[in-house]
Image 1 (cartoon, rainbow, N blue to C red):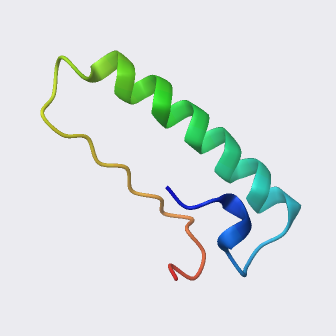
Image 2 (cartoon, rainbow, N blue to C red):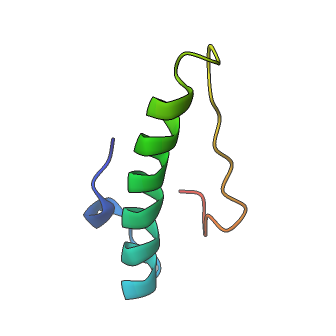
Image 3 (cartoon, rainbow, N blue to C red):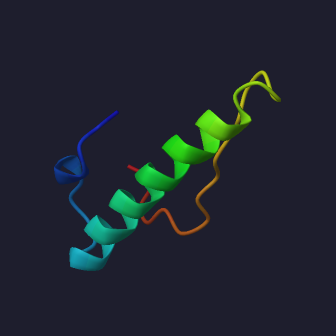
Length: 50
């Protein structure tokens, strides 16, 4: 996984969002690992997408 320092967009709010999403997805995927073969996360507010 890329570090949150690797992006060239956003500001402090972007850093906070990425940290929270990372923590949430780690817990979510751990909790659902036995139930699903794969999980997808789509971020509708992903910025430039680069």
